[in-house]
Length: 109
Length: 113
Image (tube, rainbow over all chains, first blue to last red; front, side):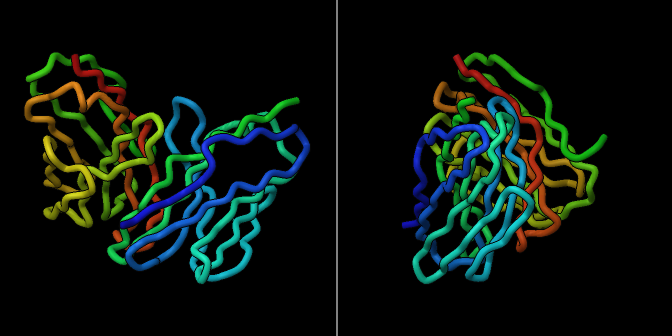
């Protein structure tokens, strides 16, 4: 079957760095997406990886290892506004997104 | 309109009633999607459409139907609502059905009693 695993909740301190891990099993693979979702709002796109390696975009970076079925989202210089859920989604052979349940990130001052 | 709109924002519905959730996008995207989001679960795809005039079933299509008469609109209909359909429903769109950066509407919170 198809499955996405990510931690349910993480806590970090303002100004620090946090890494949110995601492992995936899909029928075929066409890319890995990360989305951010603030409470009560819609998900918004953060990053996309299809090749192995690190993609950096400002304070956020995303890493992919296709051989390990593994990705992580790295958030640097954490701000209070980064408190949100972070959703990992893998695109299968039919180009459908398979979604994880999300990681709720709590930022403490 | 800028992006994707959904209506209504929220709705309380008696079981057995018929309900249509509306979704409109102005980005001329070819692909559109309907998801439901339940606490502790990932977004689950209900139905999708890769282009106007075509639709497909997602992971949880039972009890729901869709139509795609034109590029902009993608309504979701619950023929006879049941309490298990209580959820937050998100409509999304993407340029096409392959590269899948999806843009989401604000969601509809539906409660079926």
